[in-house]
Amino acid sequence: MTNEPQTVELTRAVEDFLKAVFSLQGSDARVSTNDLADTLQRTQPTVTDMAQRLMSGGLVDYQKYKGVMLTHAGQEIALRVIRRHRLLELYLVRELGYPLAEVHQEAESLEHAVSERFIEALARRLDDPQFDPHGDIIPAADGTMAERHLLPLTDLPTGQAATVSRLRATSAEMLQHILDRGFALGAQVVVIARDPFDGPITARIDGSERLIGHTAAGYVDVEVA
Image (cartoon, rainbow, N blue to C red; front, side, top):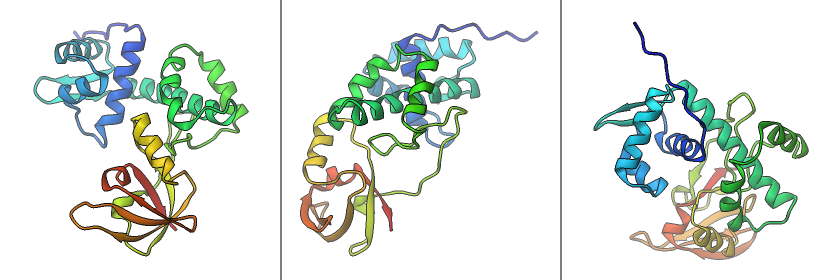
């Protein structure tokens, strides 16, 4: 006799947990409870308890000492939450004039309060966009996601033209630091020189020469022209 999955209420904590697993797991990889605890800013026992509860609900596969991965049902929920979050970020920037460095926390609160009907109306209002204001892919309503081939600015060969296509910084301060150096989405970039031993990178951005530290450059993804 098989055990039927228990019904899990989709609270903010549950949605945040599933979203964090999706963001961390990569391709068919398990996520450690330590990494989840760091991302969610929760204790490891709290994360382990949530993993066990969501496993009973059929949303994750949890193995002690091996970590967590989403089931198909868990991934569907995670993608819906990510879709809500990224559409809200785009709306806040495009329609309400929010600075890019401020939209993440606002969308974090809103994503748990709005209905699916509202989100689909928002998507139509925004002409069904593929990317949020950070350059992250917005999952389609059916959960599919477009493919992109990006590389970090730190790996861009010297002299190779590229376009700034994604800003991965989660810290508002780091994101603003990158923007202040001219690395906005859509900017044309060419690396001119690199200081050795992970030193700063000199780049030409839309014709202007700029300097950016190696750590900050690692959060800038580009698409080769």
